[in-house]
Length: 378
Image 1: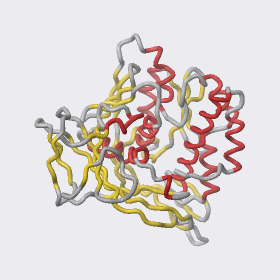
Image 2: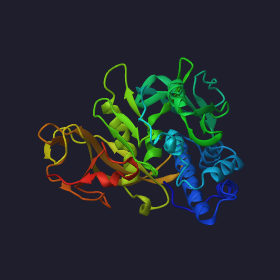
Image 3: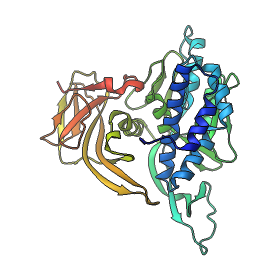
């Protein structure tokens, strides 16, 4: 999340990508595309790329500006039809399914992935013979299969198999690995590969949630605490399943962490900022009474610190430490969370670090408006 003057390469791209749109829509699309590119570029910076290299890569992944312009001119009467993966396509097709019975499919997901590592390149270092890698600004970044990171991931094969039932086509770039999504011959979205295993590309479900939280004209929700179901209006539902058990914990942890970027407003801190999650104190389990139905999933956030840091490439930023925990409401309407005993429950996200905690209902709340799920204990 960056608040600064639009870089010249991005401005040139946006000018070409919004050609032909009505003035009001052009400004809206310009702002949405700019936010998407800057968010992706910042993510690449924290993986080790220089600011210029990160911006260039983000623009390459988005695709040629004239192709984007052609797609946007075809759908400019639908707000915010960019910066989202599969849901962008689903929003277009909503009308085709509005009068039909809501289709439902099962989508297998993985709850762990190989870790991405970056090391400084030098003359003595051999080329890294790994499946996922890139080189930039004196760094070699690669997939380390000996280490894992938690998350939620879908194979590209499963995405294609299940989403093509709705008329969607996909194409993976041989250069960047980005997966483009097409609907009725139009480019509507792009998702990024998280890792490869046994020749299969896996996509990060966090990107799916991020797009949904960007705001769309149809309601997008999750429900089900153990085997979550991704519901897209009347278009369809996708039950997320895992062969090793119930993926609910991993799914809602991924969602709650992505939601922090939309719930908090750190832009007033300066030019660059990051959000770093911390585990809450395991000794302070509290029973929080609610008016919620059993089975609803709740997230609790506390902003505990803010301090300056520097990236591996020397870029200064403000690091914000936040604790987040998810839990399920029991039969008595109680949700058990690890919170300080002197915590003060707030009706809105706080504007500075402290003891204020706010609670959000993640299930059955539109992902495009998660702030509407903030509530106070009973």
